[in-house]
Length: 496
Image (cartoon, rainbow, N blue to C red; front, side, top):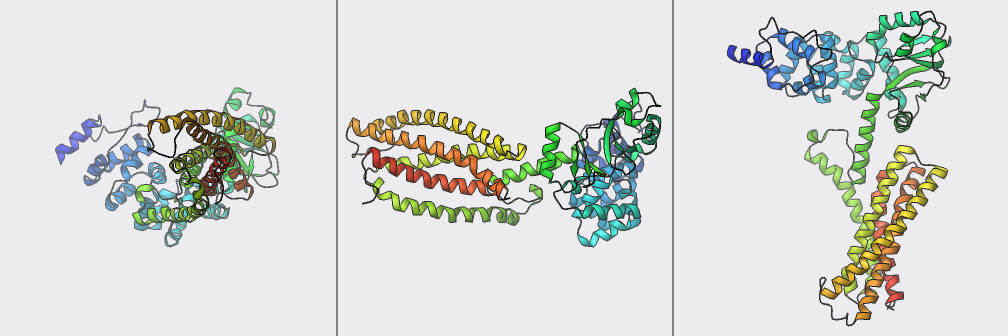
């Protein structure tokens, strides 16, 4: 065991236990992988000094990845050993399952060392996801003021700016000097989420401006903060939907967004790292819904097969029920197509290609609505642009299909059909296919562009209903258009 210890120390470029310390010349923590085996070994050796040095020198994200692989006993030893300054940040980055293991095993007094160092927004998110039997234990480990703030934040509706914000920011009154402002930053700045942007308020705490730290440093300390602040404030209300918040960050290319009440008093801020998490969750949800999968907040690797089955089954059953309408349409329309059997073999290609083209436009439409909330003239411009693109796509595809279908029939690629007897008959059939493609592509793309907007109008997530509705509509329309074109070009009666 002793030899293993020395090997590990050598691998970490450390000469001995006494010399295992953070290099003072480093300006940031070591951002390289650390194996969970390293932590396990020093935990087995009960070497608290090296564990603290590792936690202090390595990036907390890398440490948390290693901690995830510790068993419950090792996990508890690690958090009882490591200083609260480092352990709080590492704890914040752990999975909910690991957090609950720690909370279950610790007393409220032991938890106090961790939660006292956690930022309030991370603490709120943590408490919100805890089982009810563990919430009390965590709250007892917090201060009275933190409990009050947690209660306030938990009352904000999920998915709003209020549920995302943190109160860890620096505000200053407009009549204070730059010198007073810098003194305040030095005093409380370490506890705050950010000190780069300072929020300026009047005597009634109404937000009237912002000031970046570099502006304060560049100006005379005797100047008033109000003289150097930026009065143009971009903010949101506590009730603002998180999707709107994401759009504000993208639109104005900002890293911090203040949150106010209806009177304009600042209540908190939302930082870029929090909004990235929201955007990732929104994107994941949309991708899953478009694929017909019920969204779950659980990580995939922690999701059981039964839970996966439940997320798949509902949409699969729904699609089977919707496909019934396609079967009904085909049952009414198949008789005319049987006059020339080769037409039946071509129909799946028409339905599939039209559906794919509609999916292209619906995906773009959902994304544009999500990012830019297309309204009024913007949406009409989007619709007109997609219509022009649909016509160009339809012309291109119908031309290619004319030549390709002709080649299929002439070479017998799709079967030797005796009913196709002469050149004129072949030209009529390929013309029918080409015309059908032209119309179904245009109609499909227009449906793909309008269904998401309609869903948004009735306050339904476009990703939820677009895929099944577009798929079913396009298949039915493809069948109907194909039969109608066959009637006019090939003189096949619609009904016998």
